[in-house]
Image (cartoon, rainbow, N blue to C red):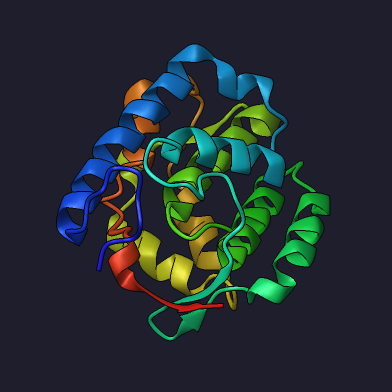
Amino acid sequence: MALENKLGITDSAELAREEERISKKKALELFESGCLDTLSAGTFKTLSEVHRILFEDIYDFAGKLRNVNIAKGNFRFAPVIYLEAALENIDKMPQSTFDEIIEKYVEMNVAHPFREGNGRSGRIWLDHMLKTNLNKVVDWSLVDKDDYLLAMERSPIRDIEIKHVLGNALTDSVNDREMYMKGIDASYFYEGYTAYKSNEL
């Protein structure tokens, strides 16, 4: 079953292809317009705006908090009833060092505030924090997808691995379009709603 969408697509594979095509186009526009640089780094408001821009042509819920509980594999993301409180706490987390920024990124991943598209919008949000505070971004072409996914899976318990994986890929080429676009390559990072289980509330 495909998620309900504005495109009227009912086939999940077709929706995934269209979703990736449209969100990549929107992400590129976001990058080239300079709009991202006008937003406050590290806030849920900014993450929500990024998500809205990427997915507004596809989903009615673009930029809006999810109203379903979701899990990936055996990991359950923050329950809906605690989501707003979790996001308020994440907003207050410090972000002046690399370690603090990654810890904030990990917590936002645990929150998983949107029904779909958390990975893509989250990686843009992460790079925006790194660029604003450290004048660095992740060179996603240097990030091994398996290492990244395993490290993210373990990060709520042990974040040293994701810090290592991303720390080794930092660059000061903060305006490199190709590196930025690699971070939102959904197929590369195996992102997709087909990996999720949901319980409609």
